[in-house]
Length: 356
Image (cartoon, rainbow, N blue to C red; front, side, top):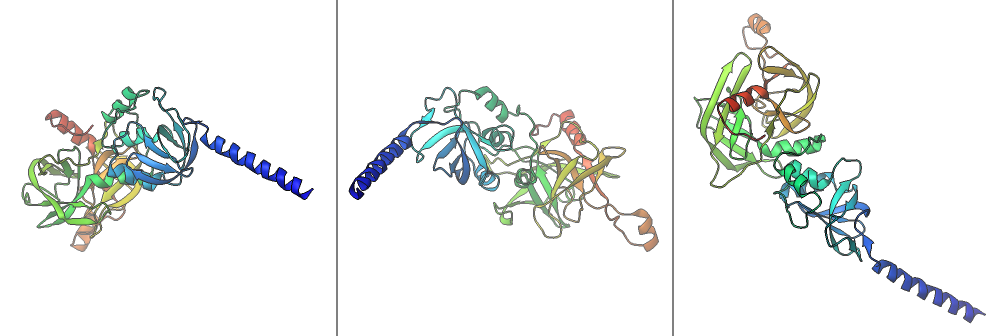
């Protein structure tokens, strides 16, 4: 009896093992496959907990794309969608590579589209891209829809385009508005009197790279009157060099809208803070709630679509307190910014190309 029982159990285990192997070898559809992201291979490839390696259709890899996925996608649940015209619609084993559009749980659109829209990819890879080639190319040429960014995403977008400006009078912040080195800051940071200033970039870890700097090619326009204080200038890049940049908004932000600032105050670098736009004032400037200090001057203020709405002007002096004390007194809690629409209008009027 025991032998019969043992024989039956052995047969059952054998059948289950064979069935399991057949199930594992059974072709499964890429579309609808779900799982958690456990690691990132490069700027267009990730690995899932089930063993699958997923190549993001339409995306050329970049270091920035890899960094974004490492910080914002690892640990998230995703769903795969195959291109309808791709010959590869299924896979047999988990230890393989598939091509797919990736939908991150809780987020609109695809991860592929976000990497392209936010310029975290090196461009569109048209290999195996059939379903949405037109739409994907529109992302890369600037026709994609606005997507609200998280704090982490916005900081990642702003930081690479921001830099420190060093002069004989001190330092301030500046930022690029096209990939050819067109940049903005405040007049009191950079003007016609200190063109020997240098622009210093940051390393990938966010620290100042003192060996990575550029000179000022020319000051295109500089202005300072009242609370309007800005300089448009050209950074001298190396031959063929392209830089990350921020787009200028095409309409004013609303009073009360959430905004963010990056600046380099008091010896720190890439200090990211969020707040709200308080209100627009007469002329082309607005007040905001983000604390500002020396060194923040000239940094970008952006909305959460990643568009520049203003140039930060960090210090406002209280005239009444100054008259009473006989020395300059800062009006605490008041920060100003030059309206980006003024800069945009000036650039358009003079036919100067910038990132849109």
